[in-house]
Structure formats: C-alpha cells, structure tokens
Length: 285
Image (cartoon, rainbow, N blue to C red):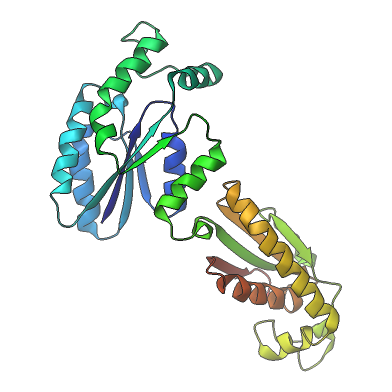
C-alpha cells in the first residue's frame, strides 16, 4: 500500500494538496488524531481495498503531534507499506497575509493569545523533524493554486494528463441538454442516418452507421477540426488545475451522429493515454 503523509505549516496549502491527491485516486483523510493513525493504516492495508492512501496531519493534533514522527518511523519498518512525506511551507509574511484574507484563526491562536507571529514561529519549530524527513518539499509562497496542483501531480503521475478525468457524452437535443457539460458540440448539421431505412434502428456503435456518418467530407473535416480544438484545450485545462472535463455531442435523437462522434473522439483521446469515460445518454430511447 502506498501511504502519503501530508504535513506542513498551517495555511501553506495542505488542503489543496489533499484535493489533488483525491482527484488522482488516493483515499484521503484530513486531521486524523495521531493515536489513530496506526490503526487506520492497518485497517486500510488489511482490507485490500485501498492501494493509495493520503493522510493530512499537523499541529491541530495538539499535544499528540510529537507522536507523528515516531509513527512515521514505525510505518517505515513495514514491508507492506510504502510511506512518503510531503511537506508544504510558506514564508511568515505570506502566511500572515493568507490568515488575514481568510479571517481564520491559527491552530495555536489561543495558546499565544492571538499573536500570529509567535504562533507561526512556534509551529515552524515543532515541524522541524517532519521537514527534515520529507520526501517532497513544496514552498508555496509564490505559487498560484493551479501551479501547486501541477507541482503535486508531477510528483505522483507519470503524465500530467493523468490528473484529468474526461467524460464524453452523446445526447439528443429533443430530450434536453445536460447541465453538467463543459463543452457541447452540435452535429445536427451532418447527414442523418435516421432517414436510411437500413440504419434507422441502429446506433452509432454499429460500424455501418459510423461508416455512413463519416462517409461525407464535411463529417471528416468537422471531426478533424474538433480534434485540433480538443488537443489545444486539454493542456490549458490541465495547467489551470481542472480535474474533470465533460464533452458532449448532440444530434436530434442521440442515437446516430452524436454517438459516432463521441466514440471516435474517445479513441482519439485514448491514443494519447488520456483517461476517458464514455456515456451515451439517449441511444436506447
């Protein structure tokens, strides 16, 4: 089992890191009490259902935080757990600015009677042992959210595109457009197989329908232009930290042309090792 311990300064981006880890397939839990970490990890490992787990730990654990370093050493001794530590940090000036913008209290606020400078400095000292053993270190002072996400994915994914879940949908305009779509393409401008008696009862999953739809020059030109557009947009979406993209193709009934284009674009994206889920909403209606 792969276990990632996410820790670091309060306000330095741990929550953003955990969001990314969840998006790329890790089972994530935040602010787990130190005395429950070992038991939680053992349950995940023994169940066999959790191959990748990320836990966020910080000084919110209170007086038990010192135990985290000892827990880490115990986990490293296990042959069945590959444990790594990711540490986030930011300058004192930036952390103070972030707390003022969010108007949230520092976890040590009460202990230092609202003195944010003292709280941050004390936390920094407490975190020295975890900072020294960190496998991944990210200084977030000058990073935008999308840049932080890109940095994290670069550590844990072979390809940046792995961080993006793409869903392709076909639908019929006569049944309404789904509100979850990010990009909608209307292919009703193409010749309709519905008016071919031998194709009317089939769908775009049938090779004969696909051959008919793509047998026209305008269909091939449109598909090539759409592929160029999607290929251009994908890196931009990934760079901005978008984790899910829904692309929809619509025709009149959602059985022929839209299904054909969704299937062809699926193959195009899969050839680039992009994860794709395809859903034909109305093909059975």
